[in-house]
Length: 308
Image 1 (spheres, rainbow, N blue to C red):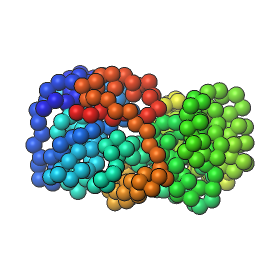
Image 2: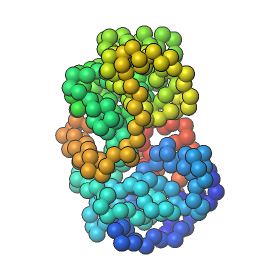
Image 3: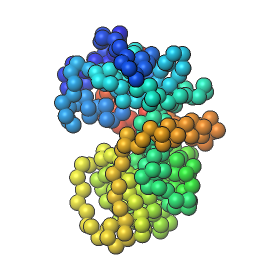
Image 4: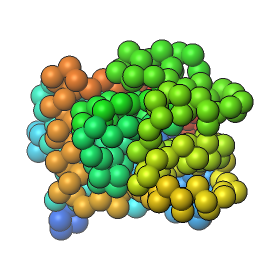
């Protein structure tokens, strides 16, 4: 079969690879689209441990099993999703509604579930609370800012670097936006946008944006830490957390059990069909996988989808 094949740490090539054979409890998936995520780039690079070689990257995909369209994730190595065929645990398959296209399904997958579950499962968002979404123009942030409203937030503030990202956030329902292209008076601008109250921060950035947001949390506030694209280290004054009794909570969507994940995925599909949740994605041929990896390294601001 044709696949993205990682033969050395770095960027995979489009090449031939052995076809997978399902074991007990697994389903053989005919892949129709595969998602590309920042974690795929990190795993392939070897920066978080040596990758299996040779192998097919990809932690999520859409395809068919016995004629049924499904979303799947976490294939058994070395058979990732970026191939014509892949494997998935049968009990972890998630059904797709007929009117949900492949790209939308993948935008709701790892990125979408991270944004949604960060609020519902980690922050335990309470109706009426104010939510700040950092990196609101990214694949996670786009879903998170809409999820905040759908889950009952009273005020939703979006923070993004580009003017286009800020405008898009307002179109998607943000009450206010914060420009992250400058660090000047960032905390003050966040406080103003939040109208003096900040209960929950969804943070895929870390670095200076997270530091500014932490200083704005009100009593009982929570910063949900899901990524560090703006920096790996941050020096904090612990008084930020002691005096307002706030917390930093690390979160990964993969840590949530299948039941809540499947329920959230089904609910997001319903919201999409009701016109209440919008996604963005960019589809590319699987044969252009090297270009797709290079684009992902530059933070494309859109979910990347590879089509076999």
